Image (cartoon, rainbow, N blue to C red; front, side, top):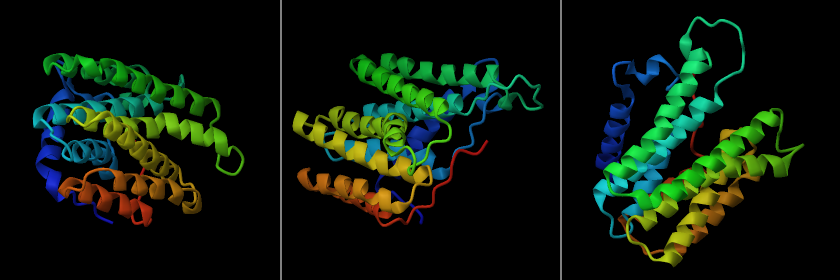
Length: 256
């Protein structure tokens, strides 16, 4: 199923341009030479899209909202690069399959979030973003310790990993997207819970978990949207959610 997101195409193109600019490492070339950066279309847009759609529900400032969406996507990309690094000591033909250069690229992209915050007078978001990074990395560490988990044998553990690795970042997209756009605290909390539930459903489907375990999270997210102001953006957010709730989205993991 195609995800159109027509109302935010301009903002998504701005995010894409900023990401591509950051992937050019001074004097070294494009980061894709040193680490796998082949993401599915869904993973390239879903986090920025959630940030922007939520932000546009309130009194958003486009430049700061696009900056935040770019930062959150850089955090996601960095975490994926690190998560896909293996500890093999064998010689590799492609440096992107090694350890040292991909780790350095991941660290480079993580560092860019601080630069963006400084350049756009957004340092108040340093602590919540740093906390998100810590939770994502904690989840990745836990996953590496339990590489053969599944919903049948370790349901609670799998839930906790996906909550840290995926859902907390989704919740950051939606709650910070609301906060940076002037939402009141009650709406920020609603959007946090919305993103958390959306992210839990997304992460479970991404891991190939049967839809019967997942639908409830999308339903909970859908119910939360009833408590925020109706707008063009909230309607598109609801339409986006419905594609997941109705199991209409094809998932593809990072290629690399």
